[in-house]
Structure formats: C-alpha cells, structure tokens
Length: 270
Length: 326
Image 1 (tube, chains in turn yellow, brown):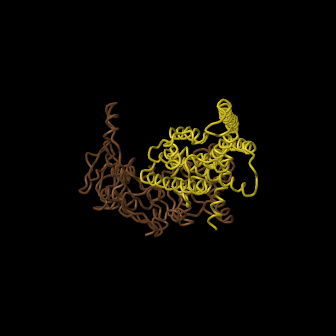
Image 2 (tube, each protein chain N blue to C red; image 1 turned 90 degrees about the vertical axis):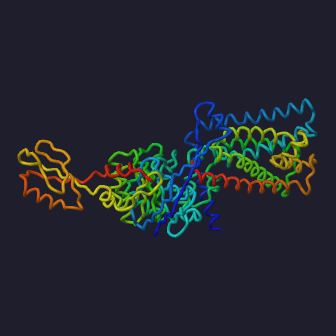
Image 3 (tube, chains in turn yellow, cyan; image 1 turned 180 degrees about the vertical axis):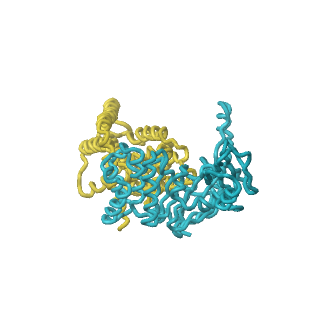
C-alpha cells in the first residue's frame, strides 16, 4: 500500500513536470494541436464516402464503421497522452537517459511509463472521444450501468493493448538504437488495421492480426461484441473477455521485452 | 570494507569497420567482431568517509568502472558491493544510498526551474519535508543554490548548473557520492567552490567520495588516496605522496653560488644542468636527507641560496600513464 502511494505521488509529479515543461513552448503545442483534428476528419470523411459509394463495407454500415473507427482512435488518443515515449526509446538509448533511471530507487519500466504526459496528445484524445461518442449515438448505443462499465473496460483494454504493442516493437531500439522508422511503419499499419473491419482482409491476414499481432482486439473484436455482429473468425467464450485477457497478456509480454532490452542496455551502455 | 570491487571485468564486443563501400558491404555479411576489454580484473576496497581519486588517461576505463560501481552497467564478471549489498542484485536498495554526478551530463530538468527537479527527487527518494528543508538550507550554505532555485536550468551557467547537480545528488543524504569529472570546463572560482563543497560534506557528514577527474589540482587538494588505472588495469593504489615517492624517489636541489664555480660535486648527487652560478641537481631522498645534503654542500662551497624542489604531480602522473601495462 505504501509502495502504491509512493508510485502514485511520483507519477503525479512526473505528469506535473512534463506539463510544465511543455507549456514552456506554447506555440509548438498550438500549432500541432490545430493539425490533429484535420487528420481525424479526413479519416472519417474517407469512411463516409466509401460507404456512400458502396453502401456498406463487408456488411458494416457507416454508423458501425464510425463506432469502430472512434474506438480505435480513442485508444490511440490514450496512448498518445500516456505512452508516446515508446516512440523515443532509440533517442533515450543514444542519449543515455536510462542511466538516470537506473540510478533511482524505482523500477525503470515504471519511471519510463510515468515520466511523460503528452499535452498535445490530449487533442487526439478529445477528437477520438468526440468521434466515438458521436458514433455511439449513431448506432443508438444504450447507456446502462453495465454497458457503461463494459465500454470503459473495453477502452482501457484496447488502450493498454495498443501501447503494449508499441512497447514491444519500439524496444527493438535497445538493440538497433533507432526507433523512428519502426514507429512510422507501425503507426501506418495500426491505422489501416484498426480503421476497417478485419473481415475485409484475407483469412490468413485475419489470423495473423488475431493471434500473432493481436491488433484485432484494439477495435474490431470489441466493436463486434458491442454491436452484436459476428466476427469472421469465431472466438470461443465472450469477446470482451478475450479483449481484456489479450491486452493484459500482451502488456506483460511488453514488460518482458522491455526488460530484455534494458538488460542489453546495461551490458553495453549508450 | 564499505565498498568492495572484486575482480571486475568488462568486455565490449566491437564490430571492426573496413574501408570503403566494399568493406561496408562485407561487414554486413561477415562482421568482424573484436572483444575489447575496457576493465581488466580490477579489485579494490574503499573505507567509509574516504575521498578517493580515481584517475587515468582518456579511455583507461574510468567511466566504465564508475558505471559498474553505480549499477548502471553490468560487469562481464566480478562483483561490486556497497555496504554489504550487491550493487546489481539489490539495485534499488543500493542506489537509494548513493548520489551520482556526471560532469558532462545534467540530471536536472532542462526547461524547468531548479527547485522543480529537487521537488521531484524529494518524492522519488521519499524524503521527509523537515529533512528536505534542512538539507536544502545546509546545501544552500555551501553551494549558494538559494538564489538559483527559480531560474530555469537551461539559463544557469555551467558552474551554477554543477552546483545544482551536486545539491540534487546530496538531497537524500547518501553515504556515497560518485563524481565523474565534476570540475570539467569550470573556471577557477567555480572549481574552488566545488572542491570546498566536497571537502565540507566529507568532513561534516562523513560522505564517502569517489572522484574521477583529469584535474590534478582536484586530486592534490582533496584526495588522500589515489587509484590510478591504465588500459583497464589498476596500476597504482595508495596515498598521493607514497605514489610520488615510489615513482620518483628523486628530489631536486637548485643551488646558487656566490661566484661562478667550475663544478659542484657531492657523491650522492647527480648534476643536471648549470647556468652561470646556478646548479641543478638531483638526489635520492632515501639515500640522503635534504637538510644533511644542504649542510654538507654549504661546508664545501660558497653558497648564496639553496632551493628544494618537489617533483611536479603532473610529471609523476604522466610518467605513470606512459608506462606500458603488461
């Protein structure tokens, strides 16, 4: 209990410091924040026109697609706020930032996870949330106590999953010292795979996105579960439970990969 | 021993780069790896409250040793323990009782006021508010950080920043302080302030200090004991004066005579050079004391002035650096 309190206090101060740090450069924040809604709006417009012209996409109507798109981007928003530092592991390695973390009496993974709170990412979060709640309205989502808790759990799980996948891939920077191209590639890949229903892809690709890199659990499977659509690959038991289980498993795996990377760092330095 | 370094070895695997495009391509397929031994079977112990200078030429393995002693880097073999705990197995426990300052790299938040970094450390090390305020005021007495507290770190001068870094490293009352080139790039006044700080905390709090530096004035003024490494190996370990005596047992005598003399002779003295009435000579202080030699010379020759010269530390150290390690 005392240890949890200690970690919370430190995390809160980390957040405070990183917000203050970013407010030192307000124009940069403003400029970037203006760009973000444009990015999302082009995405949703693309979906809209696609469905307008083809009537539906693999049996999904525009409101349903918007719901899935919104869920995907909401998790992207959460990741952008809390764990964008995954993208910079390469830079941290080169600059020897992990030295400083290794000198503190706290877990390095904790320090790494808590050290940055991305103010600009809040824009991603707001826009993602706006699209998601708008889509909830479109699909006539019924807000009950139970369904609300379910939605919150799903958002939490899919955000955790997205961040964990990034941690795993970006931890390669402990070996390669470069994470920039990996980040670009993964971002692009995640965009494409969380925006459209998995069922538009060939069966083999679906299997990979379910079992190998379980991106399907970020937006597709949870959307299937909430909207009552049957997924093309049948999963035993309730999908929501799978979403939760997958995200926790992948999160634990990401900590393992991170720890292996850190081992490499401890043996070679920067 | 409070700090024990036992048979420490660190090897790096380095990829040898060949010339030109052809070399770069062949390096992709058949990389030629060489094992570089940066630290080669180093052992030593440090008692509580010692100030130890850890010196050596560039690339001797100083920083690598310090990184292993502070738990940042894992050794290829060998162990380091502080206060009976293994630095690598008990990292969190050990680091809560040590402070580390790298002269080349700040641990302060660049964009924020100095006080902010201290507040973060207060939370990380769970320092009680009363102790924290007390430590800040003590550190302020020595380092005068009070007036720097509200200035963003990026706007501090190098000397001010270093004072901030030293204070940050001492906030949680560590029993050991590692300083990796703390005076690098500083002006004379800033260097003096830092040296005074090191001497003060050692005297007042009994903090053990391990200091790596290229500035021999740091060593001379602070360290009663010196550990010298070269090419990854420990080559000297002991009090500065003892090392000097061992490396050069010689002292120099400069003698001024009343009239120009043809020669100045003594069986235990070796003449080095002569300028007019001035004779330079060298003697082994184990064979004859300076006072006895002076007396004997004065009885023999019409002497106006005699000066005794100690060897320059810089010469001695450079002599040690030059020695081949075998």
